View (cartoon, helix red, strand yellow):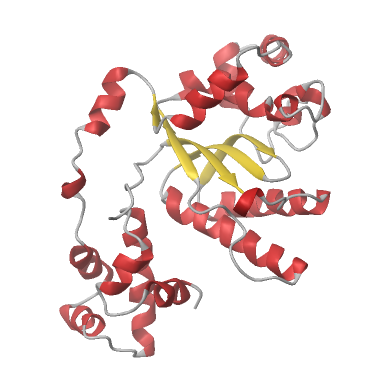
Amino acid sequence: MGRKPRIQYYGAIYHIIQGGNNRGLVFKEEKDKLYLLELLNESRDIYDFKIFAYVIMDNYYHLLMRTFNISISRIMHNINSKYAKYYNLKMGRRGPVFKGRYTSVLIQDESYLLELVRYIHNNPVAANICNSIEEYKWSSDIFYRMNIGNIVDIDVLLDTLSLDRKESLTKYVELMDQEISNYENLKNFYEGNGIIGSQAFIRSFEKTKKDERTTLDEILKRSCPTENEFNLIKKGSRKRYLTKYKIKYIQLGRDEGYSYRQIGENIGVSGTSTRNILKK
């Protein structure tokens, strides 16, 4: 059975959670966390997205982000695959670095950002790594407290608190410094729900039936300039110039929630071969 497709649209806000494979410490050293931040900053300009918050722990990371013209699936594939390549080369190992598919929670709008940012920034405190949010250097909290809009878009959240920046910064610090007594309940809510928003917002997506998603043949036709390329790929042709159309087909198929195996079987190759095509 195929995976449930991601809900994706222009301007969508996502809470992303990505853990290390087998709970491995994939960000143990400071230079590992720094490299992930460099990747995020680099990808932000290339793939057209905004970051509202992040925290990088030793074995997982959180992102709160808004996407525009590029799908969340493509963005996350780029970030995770580049980090995995860096980590495997550094450690002299092979195999998966991250724990399968990342978790993405769709957030209705900006009105939900404040409490979610507070939850994300509180991860190190909840893990008993530090006593306060401000002590942990590998989260976006510092950008808010210092009023620095660099890798993080701080304006959206701060402007919801007050249009007077001095006042909004004061309110931000006060809210972030409040102790969270029900962290596990918040974790279940912010990580266990596929969509966070009003009942009407949630129902609007639940109406979308699974069998209404685009078929793989339709995706392949959309990826090819003419019927000739479509037929060649379906027949298993290995002509080099077809690779760019296969890559587009695989990326679109993944965006629709199909597995590598399903995508590959539709054009007569294995799931492993399908993954390898993306690396070309």
